Image 1 (cartoon, rainbow, N blue to C red):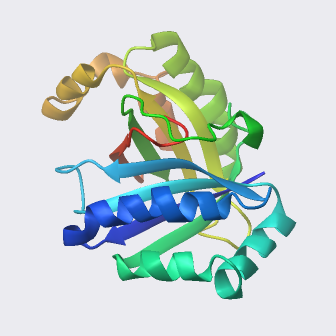
Image 2 (cartoon, one colour):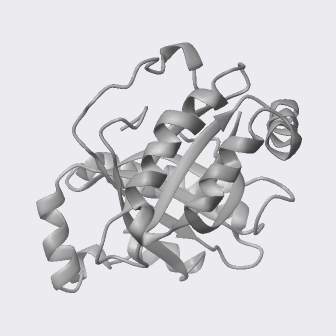
Amino acid sequence: MLFVHEEHEVRGRREKEFEAAVRDEWRPALARDDDARLLYFLHHAHGSGPSYRVVTITAVKDGAAWERLVRRIDGGDLRDAVRRLDELRYDAHAKVLVPLPWSKLQQVRFGDLPGALAEREPTLFMEDTVWPDAGKLEDYVERSGSHYAREMRERGEILTVEASFRTAYGAGRRREVILWQKVVRADFLVPLLTREVPDRFREPGTWMHDALELRDQWRSRLLRTVPWSPLT
């Protein structure tokens, strides 16, 4: 299964229109066949990065389904829906992702997704985009599962790793990994933002220390689901 990750640069005055267009036009139009489904719709939390950014993640069954989706957008039944979205945003940046071997999210049963819009409490996610050092990509993929994900499970205080991805061949920067993490205790983020990480979390054997052998460049951002997002 493939996952299409898009970042939308939305026109500020038309933010609500954009969300409504995705919810009421794009989402049902996408679901006219069995190739793809929208999974997440999230706002980039204000004060934590560029303004009026939206992130969407779409599950696509396989490469053939992705090709059919592209053709539907370029000249088929999805063309008008995309044209409508383009009126409400400045641009969109997309990359195609595949799940890491250790990711909890490998497949999505489309039949298990809510067919009707359901209102639920928004969820906060921390998305880490990581650029491993040259020659260290495969080591990072393996050790982020055996070390980082394990450490997060054992601590369980702030984050749970819900999924992990890498860019598909030819569909983004080769050395890029995304860690998709649900914020369990938002109040625990305050010490993380206002104070330096305690030394005990930087000692040998901790991820913050050992991962420096593999990378020291990444970006974290906070994303908040909307109540109707199919997954939260």
